[in-house]
Length: 481
Ligand SMILES: NC(=O)C1=CN([C@@H]2O[C@H](COP(=O)(O)OP(=O)(O)OC[C@H]3O[C@@H](n4cnc5c(N)ncnc54)[C@H](O)[C@@H]3O)[C@@H](O)[C@H]2O)[C@@H](O)CC1
Ligand SMILES: [K+]
Image (tube, rainbow, N blue to C red; front, side, top):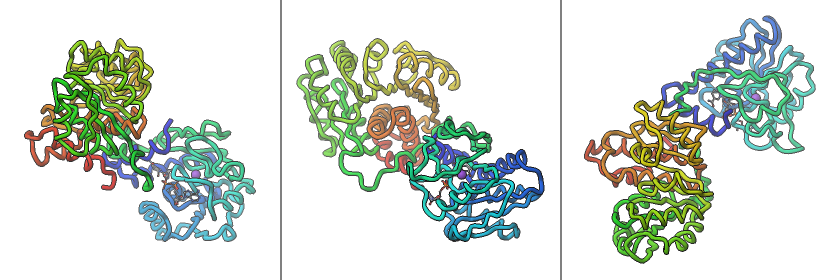
């Protein structure tokens, strides 16, 4: 099962792997034609009703594969208003090939005749809201025809993710007899009374398994968002180390958080603040985190969207006891890193945790280890299920798993073995945890951190340091390439 959002990400990842969308569209068109051949015999009349997006584009391709049929393409709208380049190119190919194609600017000009089969390629996963004109009236007109309907990807008028009719009770939708859907079943198809064919269109498994630029698409911000809406992050750490919480906090800011506060021992606070005026410091007395501070930390944490717990905290008995007490009472989202990790397996918590161990830390937690990344991914998934938390196991290939799904990240380079890059990752994941579902936050964080490292490596080679990564996080998180 795949949501429209995830499908768009996978599609962009496939493109980055060298399988361009136009090639996928060719496969989709071919798949439509295969299903058509199973439904009606050569010579039958097939009306291909096409919208102006890629759903329509798929059927424009199908027309080329169905030349032994009496096909008639009906494009809903002027060709100049086709929304994607690849669909426009396929329209051009049809016209140049002199295949029958009509432009329907107004539903009154829609003359489908009496076809043996209707192909509904009006709207697919790119639909938003109730149907507009001329789509709405054309859908109504198609409802009056006798012919069976094959919908492309999803019946027009149906929400691909929920199966609900768009526009509520006033909405209109295609009552499909058959659906040919691409790559994987869309959740909204489950509730339909239609025969569904899932067509493999050649998207590599890697486009789904490995993180890629498509994973960043979910970060697109609403233009009207205001301060605080894009995440407030609390970093809890410091004591024996000052650098770690500072790096995590600075990384959270660069990864898009609106406000980042650092709760750390007094002795460390001044240094953290000196590093950057962008950080807000919330000092607690003493030289290390301890039980008496837990109430105050809980209170602070409740006022943030995500917490990053652990950087530079050290492994004193007092600090680890405090982590345990915090987790027993905390119910929000937290990234757990460094020494705080070892507390996780034995603690009973209602919090949602993203744990970011490297393989040594994973073993210290009692977790599994394996040489190759594929076995490591399987074992990590089992262990995440046992912990009931999300794991981001750092390595050459980072493994992200919630116990069910697995995503593997391949960005990053050997220059990143320098100290502090783990703190940067924890901070970046913290910022993302404030705005994305936890599993996605971990996957996107791993991708962006490694990509920032790769950009830094281009400039600095193996001389790169953790702060270089922080500076490059914004570029690594950009979607508008
Ligand atoms: N990996 C993928 O994602 C692939 C997608 N493909 C096809 O591409 C489709 C998605 O294409 P698009 O993203 O271009 O989107 P669609 O073609 O589903 O719809 C986008 C178009 O519909 C218009 N529109 C949106 N909501 C509307 C409404 N309520 N009333 C009237 N018009 C509306 C938009 O302005 C735009 O022109 C999939 O369903 C599938 O058929 C395939 O070609 C190949 C691979
Ligand atoms: K459709």
